[in-house]
Image (tube, rainbow, N blue to C red; front, side, top):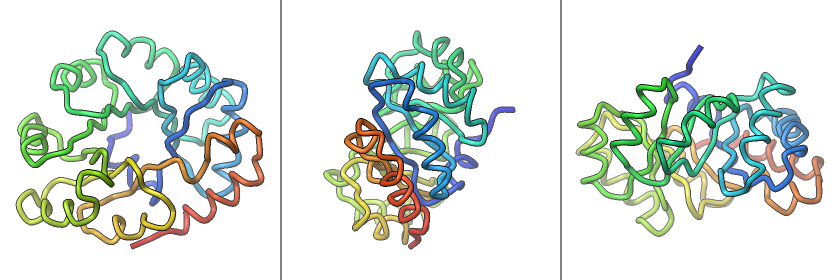
Length: 209
């Protein structure tokens, strides 16, 4: 059954955004995150191993909701679905991609950076968006100003967010969760340091506004 994007984003305060170079690390990474209390993962499609990692996570760790990030082109949608991804994230707002994902039944979290883009997304029937790159686009102050004029929209800010500043975003009424690499750093994944991932995930899972 397909989950709505907003339902996925309310599973916890943080979605780990991870880059995986070796697909075989995917299931162990997912288990470590779940042990720390995180049940959603975004695997960026920046390496050849990404979709194989998603496929392995879905097969071996069914309790983890696994999606892909950096979806740029509609022609990648069949591969994403074949890997078992349950949602996709794009860095920006591409209405052709929005339509293609909707037709394919793939929940999409598209990125926006400006109020104009947020309005265009809203007009296209979207109510849940990624705010990217969050830190360089005004941070919590920008989202705070967007809230009164577009009160029905909810956001997952991503980009430059760490453990220390996540609470500033999570305190806002229009923020459902944040995305970031801090629950599972690329270095920890590369070293297969699942103890460190569990600890970082546990700290992230306890964050709130």
